[in-house]
Image (tube, rainbow, N blue to C red; front, side, top):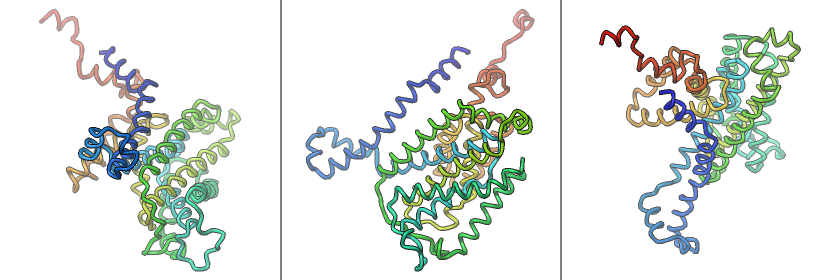
Length: 373
């Protein structure tokens, strides 16, 4: 049994497995390009074998809907990983992290010319997507630095409630600010239906964020965040500037979340306050990070992937009950797998390790029982 567990761990956490998955994800849109080329019957179609064209056109292995589905999954992984930087590594559970997503989305939309305010400065209008997305992340980071200087002084549930209140307050302020948000009409962004571009952009950001957090975890700064999570007073006594570290992590996570919010707004082509500032988006970040394992690099990736596909299956088969399923899953995670999927694999001595669980399934009989048999 130990050998089986070792094989599973070797497959899941092997660098070779990660490279193979990344190569598959990078090459997958090429099937979409090939199908479109075959349909156009241009010069590229002549270079593709006829049998391959027939397969791509008839079977449709990769479509725009497929690319959109994977793009949504990549976005969830990015958001969960960013939330984990504050909630998992630093230990400050943020129930309002979606506020940065919404701020980035609206900032990007207004900079790209979606504002309904006639007196909106011309200098801040008609930006192209790339600088607007970066500026949206910067606006979200500046807001995080401003609000974090006050909320990060709170601890435990007080910080969580303060951030939840921040999300609700900002959502209402944006809703009534019709010039900025469009009110009930929302904002319409320029239509750009290039699914492969958004697919590759979200995949690139996801890989960069995972690599960044993996590197950060090994640095002195990352170790200081973990020290703050374990014992903030003790970290201060050892000379760690806890306020600076918390605000830096908070601002970094907000910048990335805001930038992704801008990308999502451009892909969605329409936003309003209720869509951009959804509380369920923060709940998704919390659940996916907890399912994978708080304070780990791979945890949010595994948790987001598993949760995304489970939700897709449950939603498509049990439309009226899928939220009940998510609530039950959250209870199961908290009660029985508090350390998440990574805890099951990495911590052999924990009560939730895969080794302990499998041993519980196949208990060894005592020598006395064997003699009696």
